[in-house]
Length: 256
Ligand code: SF4
Image 1 (cartoon, helix red, strand yellow):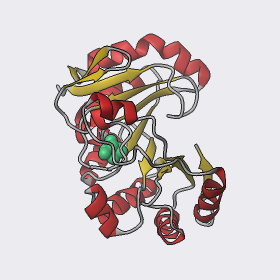
Image 2: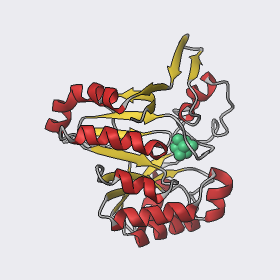
Image 3: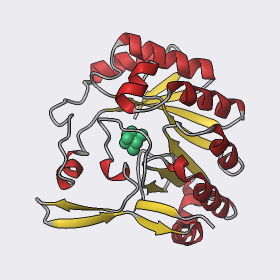
Image 4: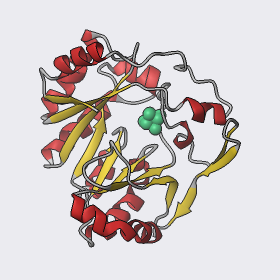
C-alpha cells in the first residue's frame, strides 16, 4: 500500500476545475521554477512556516494512506457530484507519487467522484500510463517553449514533457494546457509562439494562461527565503490579451 505526502487539503477551491471541488496538494517537486507560488511544496520533507504578521505557525507535510485521504475527501461526495465538481490533485508534482495517486483516484472513481491531475509533466511516461487507468482529466503545464530555458531555468526536460503531452492526448485523455505567464520568462512573442506550436501540434484542444501574481510572497517570508519575483508586477490586461491572441492561433485559449 502506498502513502501520499500531503501538504494541504483545500476545500471549496476555485481555479482548479469545474464545480465544487477539493484540491489536494502533494509535497515534493522535481522542478525548480524560480517564480513558484507554492514553495512549501517543493521539498518532500515536512516544513514549518512562521507567518510573523499573523503570528501563526503552519506545518506542511503529512503522510496519509490513499484510503484515509479518500475517506476524508468523500465526506463531500454529494457536493462534488451535484455540482459537476470533484477532486484536483496538485502539488508540487503529484505524478512523483503516481502509485498513491492511482490508488486514491480508484477509490474516488468507485464513488463516481472524478479527479483532475495538475502536473508539470516531467516524469516517465510509465507513470502516466498507470494513472490513465483511472484518471482522464489533466491540467498540464507548459512553462516555456525552448529546451534551454526548461533545463537551465526550471530544471526540466522539454523533450520528455512534450512527448508526455502528445501521448496523453493520443491516449484520449482530456488535457488542458496551462501556461503560467511569467514576465521575463515566457512573455516574448517568440517564446509564446513556440509554446503555442508545442500545444497545437500535440493536439491539445484548450489552453489557459495563468497570469503571474505575488500571492506566494508571504510563504517565502514565512520560510525565511528571498523571493526573486517580489518586485515583479503582474502583467497588464493588454499584455495578457496579446499573449492569449498568440496562443489562440494554435488552440482555443482562455485567461484564468
Ligand atoms: S512545477 Fe509547480 S510546484 Fe514545482 S517548482 Fe514549478 S511551480 Fe513550483
